[in-house]
Structures are given as C-alpha cells and as structure tokens.
Length: 293
Image (cartoon, rainbow, N blue to C red):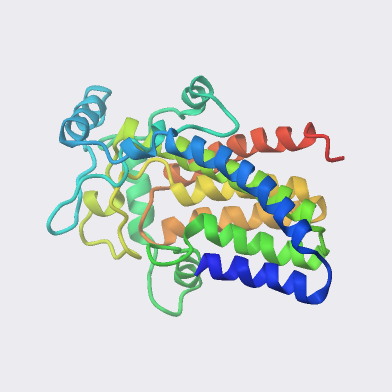
C-alpha cells in the first residue's frame, strides 16, 4: 500500500509536468541513501531487546522494593502479563545520552504508607466520574489508548493542523515534525526508564474500587501522557511562539486528564510534565542551532 502511494505520487509529478523521470530517479537515489542511514540506526537501537525476559522482570521488581517501594506494580490483567516493553528505557536516544537520561530521572514518588500517598489516592477516589462531568470528558478526549493514534499521534495531529494553518513549506514542515518527534521519542524512552526503575503501583491497585478509563499494563510513575505532552508543548511553543501558552495549557490538561481517568496519581502527572518539558528543551536547543534561521 505504501509503495502504491509512492508510485502514485511519482506518476502525478510526471503527468503534471513538474518533474521528469530523470528528476525522480535522482531524488530516489538521495532518498534511498538517507533511508538506509535511518534503517541502520533502527536495526541497532536496542528495540529488539525492549521486551525484556522473566529474569529481568523479576529483577526490576526486587530492585524497586529494595529502594523503598512498599507496593510494587502488579499486572491487573487476567491472565497477568509482564510490563509492556520493560526495557524500552534502554533504547537509543536522539537528543540526549544515557548519562543525561539518568540525570533527568526524577526523585522517588510518594510510597504507600506516606501521608502524601494517602492524600493523592484520596484525590483520585474523590473525583466523581460520569459521562456528563467535565473531568470525565477531558479524560476521554486525551485517553489515546491502544488502537488510537496514542499521545504522540495526538500531538502530531495538533501539529499538523497548525502547520497547515501557517502554510509552512515542505522543508519547514519536515523540520518541525523532526524536532517534535525526536523530542517525543526521547520522552518515551526516559519515562519508561523511570517506570522500570521505580516500578510503582497504579491507584486502582491500591484501591480496586476505582473506576478507570482503561488500565495500561505498566507501572504508574511517571505519567507517559504527561511526559509526551510536556515535550511536545515545549517544541511546538518554540516553533510557534504566539501559540506557546495554548500548547502549555493543552499539555497541562492532557496531564491532569490521567487523574480524572483514575489512571495516575498527581505526582505521576506533575513530575512527568516537568520531565517532559526538560526533555523537550534538548530538541529546542538543537533547533536553535541547526542553521535553519
């Protein structure tokens, strides 16, 4: 299907007279060389080992318990499954290195038994959830679960509308998506490193009576939605300064939607958003120094 789309695009150029067969062949030669560079990186970026294995899964849990986590994450699916992509935090990063990833790993979350944990669990439980509540509608809007375009796709759609509205050229469009998606890829790697490191339970594990919008099969701290959104808002705010405040507000709403949906504690979301902003800043700094200005 993808090859057919590419063939159709080439034919359109020929039929319209905007490119000759020689032009197209030369363009394809460049594209193939660039694509091979990208594919070579992807073949060795560590994704093949991201699932982990039973020994690693057990070690992650015992390491977290040794760090003071008194309620480690457990799969609440039937039958139980291992954490999704437990070692994704080791996938090769784009804008930062592993030492920087480790330095960006946040402080420990409030653990069960602490007063802050009790307060945050009570907050999640106190939110009334019905189809007419504003909070529930926000939770549904930002849910972005499996089978949807997920949080990175949602932010790409937001960027698409803005790029079209601003009438960016092909070159600036490619650059915008590159900066945005390198930031979100790094955000995903960093947040999974944190999830695997602390291995924290979700609110519904502490209180099974909670009503949730789905239940992701991986630990709670920190919030992936919040981290993706913080990174995306930082980059889009750089690309479109007049809309920076709007993107920050959207990221905050996306972050808090996970509390409304019963998926996360407040600490998960606030810390995730902060980390996402920090991760996005690396892509922003790259953009400021890439020569495009």
